[in-house]
Length: 244
Image (cartoon, rainbow, N blue to C red):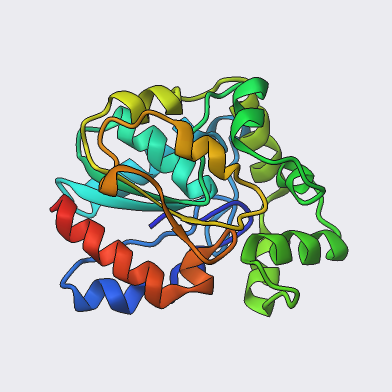
């Protein structure tokens, strides 16, 4: 389970029991520069989709997993797409809050809506007000939860800065090519009122093997796994059972 930008593993707290009750092992790390993980001393390399992907695949290998599913939220979904493109050990990928895009300014603009909160995604320094605005937009609530505010405040500013800069510069795989050609199962369980993602864009891509034939839309914003966990978890378990 891969969390989003300026977040932490705790964002998936409402999924852990549902997965464990289904008999699945769960690995939910804090990305480098996030949560309780150390900051990178090579930020330009680490804070990129390939950098994160290599570290997470290495973690799964060291933990003894020969194959694994990925659930990725927001930034975590982009890392998941990179892992799908790179590693045969990935069995399936579930995305939420992540439009598969081509890694250039035009591709990013095609999949994302530009808002004042979107502009914060790559900002090196977060003020207290920045944390409040970003977390409220990410979580779909007028009241920012303290644990999410703490996660945003302690995130390495280099992680935001280099992630966006590397992505815009094409550092990583073509995500559109991946979802249009890879035969492994992909699910998109997406908030219908996500302020960041263009729903018409994800509806219009030609997927090779998307679960249920199209994105599944829930009555939620950017974080449906947090906002409507019972509904999200039902779809998640159904997809993972389908993907085997």
